[in-house]
Length: 385
Ligand SMILES: *Cc1c(COP(=O)(O)O)cnc(C)c1O
Image (cartoon, rainbow, N blue to C red; front, side, top):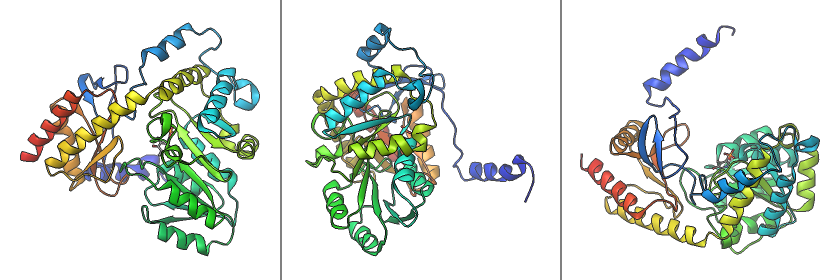
């Protein structure tokens, strides 16, 4: 059918509005931090992914201000002249930190997830992913030539059955910390299944990197593992590192294959070299960040105990992502609005992003216990109404 864009999308936009699912972009006019100015009003921010408070860290600003080796733009793709020595140093530092042979930078995590699945898998192969995987993992699977099957969230028996039936090469794909529920995949169980079925394993550590494991090395370290030859570890800088971009870490042959064949790596401009420099500094702060991680964990414990005492519906999450499940999208929006009136910015996450509407609270090491206590009080007011 032919027609105008307005004819196609007018009814869809109207339907979204009617279902309380219409999305809007709040405008931020302050640095990212626990206190922020959003839509012209000051708020205590409880929905950023800046888990260690590095996004506006003074030490990173200082390093950037003092630099004279890089400009803002990279000017080209990595394979042309965009690969600055700061990018290279960051890749070497990441590989050493994680105990793997190599690491490779990507401009975004979304592109890294696309690249790995599109490049490594071919027709006749099978990608098996957790039902609650991040949208970028799902899109990456759909963009590859492999067949794509999903298993119920954390149901590794169902996963094993799918692997048993696979004929070609298969790859297990999972978030470690799930982005909308905050719970954790069992990397030991997954590595064992992968081994038994000669499957490859892709772990998306966006919400674990910097937060879990020794020195914040992420989920493998948390479970006492280092990535093996057929493991692909993906991490992002947009969360705990407080910058932006992403990387894939693993074997020499994995990384060289991505450099030669991964279209989302080859055909795009390299991230700003100053972003790579900022991320190098962020990596140092992450490595030295045991105090930050201890504070974050204390904040998580405080929030969970306060909210569960109010009888709110929490998930099994022990991570910085602490969703409060809601009865409907309308309730999630109403609660989010009421919290805004009290000075707290907490995002309502609704279908189709999640099956059940929720307030997705995220915590940072930067939150003061007093701010968390005030958020719990605000919830107490809301649930009384
Ligand atoms: C944020 C996120 C991504 C995407 O990373 P970007 O760098 O923001 O594109 C991928 N996977 C998960 C689980 C995420 O939370």
